[in-house]
Image (cartoon, rainbow, N blue to C red):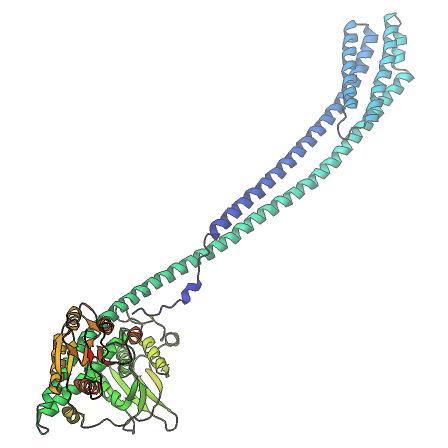
Length: 606
C-alpha cells in the first residue's frame, strides 16, 4: 500500500554542472583580464624606459656638446700658446668625436631632435675649426700673438655664439619634447592605473558574484539532499505500510474464511433448535459478532487497498453505537467516552461501513494520543432537518494543535509523534475516505483547548426494512441437483458442502484447481451448478471456470471471493454470480436454488 508522497520539497533543485561551468568561465576571464593588465603594465614600463633612455641620451648629448666645445677652445689656446704637438693631436681627436656625434644625431635623429639646430651646431664646429686651423698655422710660423688674436677675434666669437645658440636651441627643443612626453606618459600611467583598478574590480565582483552563486547552489544542494533524505524516509515508510497492508490483506483473507465457517456452523446449529430454545439467542449473538468481525475484515482490506468499497445504505446511529462499544475496549481508563446520537432512531448514509468504522477508529486513536493524562472523548451525531447532510463530530479535551500543525495535519506522513509511534497517515486516510463518500472534513483546534473534527456526509433514503424471519424462510428453502464445489479452505469447504446438502443438493467437493480440472474431465459426470473459490490452491478459480466453458459447460456458476477486482469482473460472464466472503450460507442456499430451479438448462462437464 504505497501512500502518496509529498513532492513539494522538490522545488529545490540542483543546477547540474553549472557551478563547474561558472568557475571555469570566471577563471578564464580572470586569466584574460590579468593577462591584459600585465600587457598594459609591460607596455607602460617599456614606454617609461624609452622616455628615460631618451632623456638620459639628450642630457648626455648636451653634456657632450658643451664639454667638447669647451675642450676644443681650451686645447686650441694651449696649442697656440705652447706649440706642443700633443695638444694638436688631442684637439683633432676631440673635434672628430664631436663632429661624429653631431653627424650621427643628424643622420638618425631621435624623436624630439631639432635637426636644423644640430646642423647649425655642426656648421659652427666646422667654422670654429677653420679659425683654429689658421691660428695653429700662425703659431707654427712663430707668430703666436697673431694666432691668439684670431682665437679671441670677432670671427671666432661669432662662430662660438652660433654654436652656443644652436646647441641651446637643440637642447631646449629636445627637453621640451621630453617634458611633453613625460606629461603624456603620466596621463597614460593614470589611465593604466584606472584600467588596472577596473580589471581588479571586475575580477573581484565576478568572484564575489560567483561566491554568492556557489553559496546558493550549496544551499540548494543541501535542501535537495534534505528533501531526498526525507523522500527516502517517506518511501521506506510507504514500503513498510505497503508490506503492512499486504499482511493485513492476507490476514483479512484467512479471517474471512474462518468467519464463513463460524457463521455457517452457527446458522446450522441455530436451525436445529426449536424457536423457543434458549440457545438460539446466544447463537444469534455469535452471528452478530461474526457480522461485526466481517466489518473489521473489510476495514483491513480497505487499509491494505485490496478490497473495493462495498457501498450500501448504512445506519450511522447503529454504526456509532456498535463502534462505541469497540472503542471502550481500547481506550484507557483515564479517558471517558460519551456518545450522543441525537433524537433520531436511525440516520442513513450510502457508503462502506468498514471504511466509516475505520474513520471513527482513526479519529479516536488521535484523540486518545492527544490526552496522555486523561480526558473526555465525545462522539456526537447531528442531522439538521432539511439540510440533506449529517454531521459526525469527534471531540476531545486534549492538548490541541498549533496553527502550523493544524495547517499540515491532513498531509500524508506528517506527524508530531515520536519516530515509531505514528505513521502520519491517520488523518490523510480519513480525508480520503470522507472525500470518497462525497463528504467534507473540518478540524477546529487550539492549544490547550482540545480538538474537534467534524465530518459532513450526505444522507440517503431509509431502505426497506429487512425481513425479520429470514432464518425460518431459509429453512423452507429446498433445491435439487448436482453441485461441483471447489474450495481450498477445509472449514469453508465442509460448511458449504453441508449447508448445500442439507438444502437437498448432491455436492462433489474438491480442494485444488488440478482436482477441479480432473473432475471436469469425467464425461459421465454432470453438474447443475458450479461453486468455486476465486483463489484456489494450484491455480486461479476463474481460469478453471474459463477452461470448463471452453469444454462446453454452459450452466450457471457462483464465484466466492473476498475481493472482486475489475479484471475479474471483466472475465466473468453474465450468468456467473459473485458472493463475497465471508459467505452467509443463507445467501448461498437461496442463490443456488434460484440458479438450479425449474427452467434452468443443465450444462454438461466435458
